[in-house]
Image (cartoon, rainbow, N blue to C red; front, side):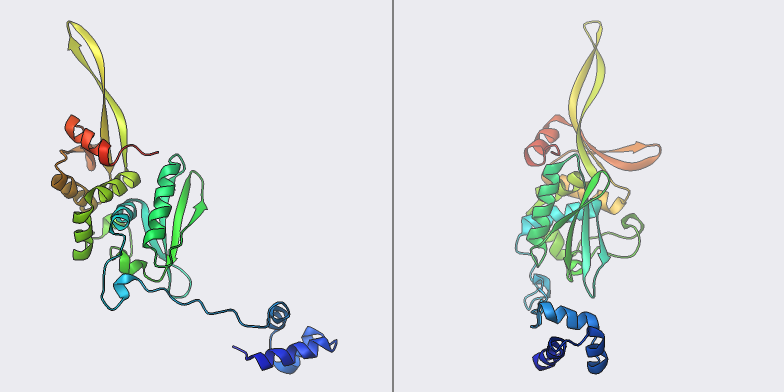
Length: 258
C-alpha cells in the first residue's frame, strides 16, 4: 500500500512528460499501478468481512430460520460448496431452467442466509447455478466435506435439526425442489367388466444418499405424511408419497415446481 505522497510524486513525474517506463524505473512502482493512479489516486476502501451469526459472540443460528431450512434442503439435494478467493467459499445450487419460480425462490433464500445478503446467477446448458460467496458457508453448512455426499455420512448439527423441527415444511419443500417432483401417475382397473384408466398425483424424492433420504422420511413421519420406498433396478433411491391424504397435505405446503 503506497501512501498518498508517494502517489502524488509519481504522478508529478508523469505530468513532466516522463514515460511510465522511466517513472517506474526511478520509483520502483509498476507501470500498471501508476496507470491506475491516473484514474484514481485515492485507495479504494477496504471491504470488511461480514461475520455470520454463528461466528458472533452469541453463536446464534441464522435469523431467517424458515429460509435456512428451505436452503438446507436445496443444498443437500443440488448444492455444493467450493473454495473461492482467499479464504472464501462459493455456495452453488443447480436449478433447472424449466422452473423459473424455483430459481427465484433459491435466489431469495441465498440472499436471506448469505451474511453479505448477495446472490447471483450463472447460466449453464439447461440449468442456472444460483451462487453466493462468503467465508462462512462451512459454518452454515457443516455437511460440507471432500467427496460426494452419498460417499460420506450426512447428519444435521443440533442447531440445524432444531431449525428443521421448527420449519419442517420448508425443509421438505427444499428437498422436493432439488431432488423431487410431483407427477401424475396412472393405472388401469376393471370396472363393470371394462378396463378403465385412472390418474392420480404422486410425489417422488430421489437421492443416492441413504442419510439424506432418511432426513426426508424422518421429517415426513413427524408431519404425518405416509410414504413408501420404491426399489428400481435393485436400487432403493426413490421415496414415494401416493396416499390421497398425504398428497393433499403435500399439495398445501409444497406443490409442484413452477
